[in-house]
Image (cartoon, rainbow, N blue to C red; front, side, top):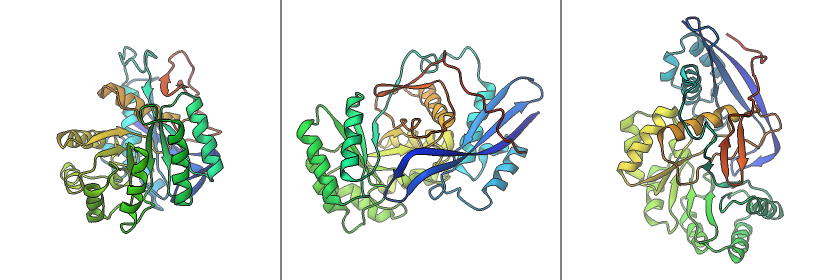
Amino acid sequence: MLQAVWTPYRLLFNFEARTSRQVMTYKDTYFVRITDSDRPGRIGYGECALFRGLSADDSPDYEEILANACRQPESALDSRCSSIRFGFETALANLEASPDNENEWLGGKRGIPINGLVWMGDKATMRSRIQQKLEAGFRIIKLKIGGINFDDELDLLREVRRNFSPDDLEIRLDANGAFTPENALARLEALSAFSVHSLEQPVKAGQIEAMAAICRKSPVPIALDEELIGVRDRNQSAGLLNDIRPAYIILKPALCGGFRASQTYIDLAESMNIGWWATSALESNIGLAAIGKWLTDNHSITMPQGLGTGQLYTNNISSPLEMRGPELFYNPAAPAASIENLPWRS
């Protein structure tokens, strides 16, 4: 018989994490722990990576919903909360994991290529952060824009392109919905001068007609991110992609329905010639490792992913995850910290 418990955990940023939506100094998350009375000693951990202010799951009764899910662990896989699906999918997979897993990433034999994420800041801070990523070996950087003066952001891109050609450095941009339907195309035209690979979520989610028009007319390939948040069935997901027709979709499993729903998006996107990659939603190392395992279990990873957030926190759960240049590795020889002593609740 399966038994599940849960606990809250507050992750503390080692800097002010700024997007066009908010400034964050901490992120609350939740862990689940599943055991099976028929298999003593087996434990599965997962992270219900709620994102306050962004998740469709963010409600005052979230902890009550999570506690109820723990009373019926198998049913939690069909929870209306994306983050709970994600956490229980991970915990149950860990419970069932075989020690003979042949996943080369988990075996430490290869890494997952990732982009270097550059958070918003003033012009000087962003310049410094870009330089740090370049010195670390990244040749694909993702810049969050929309939080400072747009002309200053153009100046930064101009400076980067003076030193690195498109052949030497790929630039991805993330507006986090900072543009409006009225100014988006003009801004995208200005950004196109810098040979930008793609721009995520130019306008706020939910403006389907406006987003579809931007995707049709933009000189920069558009990627959907926040637009995918929430739990949808296959028909709803297909309708969304068909109506908007983006160049790319960016999958955050904890926000867009868990791993099964993310795979549905991938299948639909590939049938429509839409590109995709996965990224984290500011999970701890537990959630980050789960995404890495899911990706490498199911896909041949060639396009750099967005899994570089594990070093954001001062109190992250230590794990075998390691950054080696622009790749995320799992070192099976490194010990993982125990979270057994956290204040678990039933």
